[in-house]
Image (cartoon, rainbow, N blue to C red):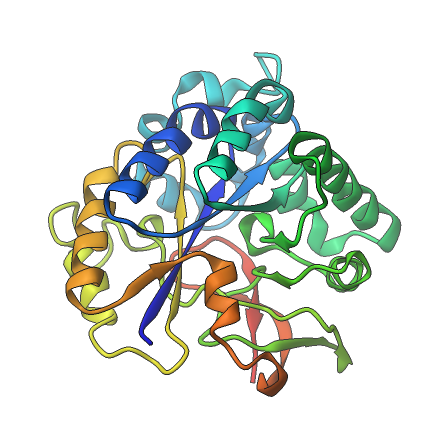
Length: 299
């Protein structure tokens, strides 16, 4: 069965409040499944300003018009404006997503803190951040989380090990080509990884002649020939849930015309022979269109 699993990363207060309900509506219209991974603590997006000093960051920002997509208020949260607590203010929206029949999981507690620091943090720091997210998720939904998708595809060995300790059904923390059982320095982590297999819109936009008008067709060309294990496509509530929703609708239509079933990550997992998944090392590698290195499926 040809499947594309839709993985929705929700990074911000605005994305949760405005982008998520819009995505629920469009997914229902196309009878498409998806999994929403929520940021559950305070929105400190404004603190990302220090990334301006990273090589390549200015170029990425100029390609994707951050102000247009995120809004001035979001870009000041945690600096000149108080950081709204997403879980406390938007719990009703999150529960409505679940009640509409969509799978929900953990993206992070504090998106900026996780994305900017986890790669070099120790076990105590990592476990504390994950536990904050688990506790908030449980308070919102009344049950423990079963799935995790790391903010910014940033991860370390301690995080993977703690996900196993928590009994996660699967995790999607990496970039790669097909599902696998992760190893870190040859240590096996018994939580299946379902990596993002397709580039995201913000990685492609305004590169090599790619524009708003042709980006959907560019991605659809990549999915013409379906791999045996299908694809995982990551979208963002702040992008596809708002200004770039017409592009997302074009993708939904195109994938259905190509014969794909659009499913949640859990449905995608259940269509796999987990016992036969290959083992692959997780390494921090560069991904075209992204700044820095991301947790990636290595050989």
